[in-house]
Image (cartoon, rainbow, N blue to C red; front, side, top):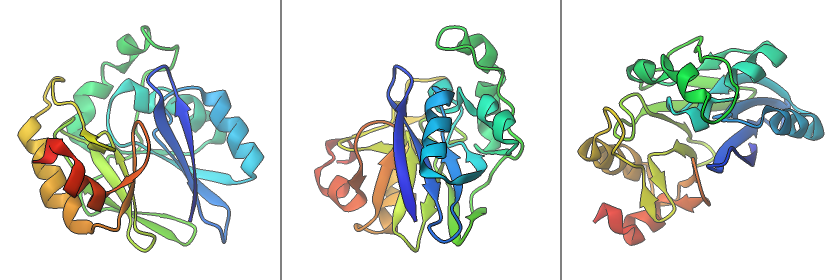
Length: 207
């Protein structure tokens, strides 16, 4: 597995391009904006995007999804259906950040679903708290987690948004993510990568 992180939007959201080294088939996780930058990088890497994966329904994570979906004629998968209320208001929100079209997912994802790209298999884990329908993508063989806005290097996701819940967020981290193993490297929705082991010991928000 290879990956490349492209910070997009003024919020510096980590759009992640992940691809199979054997087939050059790729997924684009959370294309929140700057569609041209994402398309240019895909061309530079000479890889073939098959799917768009979304972690949750905030604009900085989905803002360029429609444009990229239409350009490559590929489906948008995720998040979990409890984020539908956020995505229904995306058009009004987008006026304040960019000119993206209203968001439509092709497939809602649920806990336990599996996404395949080339020889890679990603497990879907529902991790509510930051938003009720937040999901993460876990590549078990490679020990890589794409965590969206659940956990960050030295921090955790905000829980002051509509239908956010701090206790649900903490439970998602402690019950669903930390047991995956201290050796898991995670790519957060913002900021630098870290490991679950480091955060378990040093992240003061988890104490």
